[in-house]
Image 1 (cartoon, helix red, strand yellow):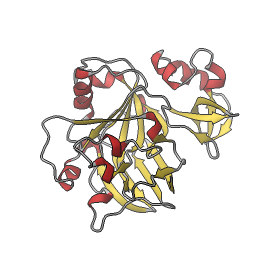
Image 2 (spheres, helix red, strand yellow):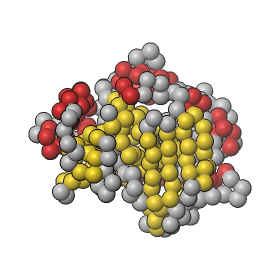
Image 3 (tube, rainbow, N blue to C red):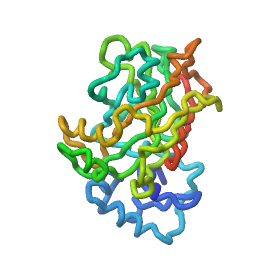
Image 4 (cartoon, helix red, strand yellow):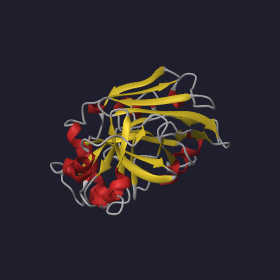
Length: 282
């Protein structure tokens, strides 16, 4: 099942993708579950799927204003330098533990919505990533049980303002400029992807392939990331983990390549989908 968050008749909603349309489940189940986070907290994905079965779409997917898959996550946990090729191009030593930082919800935009290049920098970079969306509360989760708390997957562009990222040893400023991270277009539920650790992942800037890899090449796989993160903080339904980007980022190209006004950046992940964002001056 593919689930989207979107705007219909001026109101935020969520729904199930059916062919080229959306079945508006917020209109049907909103009294019980006002948003997708509420669905996840109630463990009600199966109820949503059953209620959408055989129902005609309420809106066309094309032309509908989407929202970030989870518009209101409690936590967005990001894993840095989590592919060896990217680690080497960034000049870092092999890590003993995952490199963790956070994003804020305001830094995210949906599929087809513009990423905003901040006026303060000309170094807005792309990062293709697999997003893991949490469906159950998990604290001190073992590697063996890690996938039991996963609701599904999406595409993520961990847009990075590189000069602000490197002001200090902390990544936070460069990872949290307003509307610099893409998240979408939908969540594919975990039952549709039995092995998320074997997915082709690619970024394209104006049609040119910039990154091309596979999630099997993560330094710390999804099981290890969930175990590590839940050791120090509980993960809750609706939390998001951005699992790191492969090599090929713009800042390490010769010459460097950064996103600018008028560009189109696409992130595509096998079995998950295609996230596309235009770039505009903010």
